[in-house]
Image (cartoon, rainbow, N blue to C red):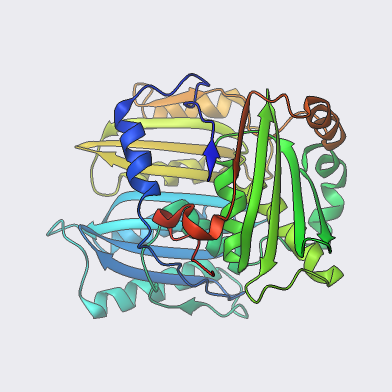
Length: 391
């Protein structure tokens, strides 16, 4: 039996019956299957038409102005961006964009046009590096957007931090990295993964997605949260029932979980854009960002009816905070009434890893929020295609 204690995003008791019904329906769906993860170090572009839009997947090396160039290509090819989500981490980027044909408002099905789109987007991802081969491919299946972003960044090995980046951020990493350990429990026949970090929404989703996409089976798990801190423990094995015995493999698991937790942490100033939707809007807005010397570290683009509701996190091109002078110039050009600056507490940042571990240890079993579940391989997150049965 799996037991979950949950609240809404404000920490209050969940009373919305619509949400409760949706959770029950999702947990009861055991028909979904797990998607395959593509592994490639080259920039990748995939497209797939489904429902009312065409889904495009892009991943590669991040650089300032990249989102502007991508949206410019799509606008130039008469595509309307109806939604998009962009993550960046360790100088890598993953992006899922949903587009329709400007003329028809329908998915793009012309194979020649799709081929041209993929070629031009691959050129954008390569940038000035002609030695970097771009890979274009059709996506193999639809899945939850955030889960797909995790898969794309994992396949792109964003957890492998370049030595230069590691040395520059050595002091910073010591303060913000989660505490993750792995040990083998020989008498039980499991490898035990322990995660201690700042709590935040979707932390469980991020860690379970990563373990599943690394092709480990989670048999038992527990988690608790007390105030701002979280503790998770997973009992895992390989699909063939073996434990994780090699030091290199254990190190890779730790790195991949660290990356999964850090990807969703939003660096930079939060900007919210709400205005009437139109073709080319994303291209115009991100072009202004680029011209003002800003880099987008994360983006969530959506359309609600005839309104575009977009959220951007931005820094300057060196990764530092944006000056208010630049922000005001930005709002004047885009529109003060439609572009707002939102200050918020950054998820996962603050106290050092040692303090997090100490606080979690002190919390013991007296946590306010907690859950435990038995065999994840039976039914947990089937609706997202996270697990399969291996009984």
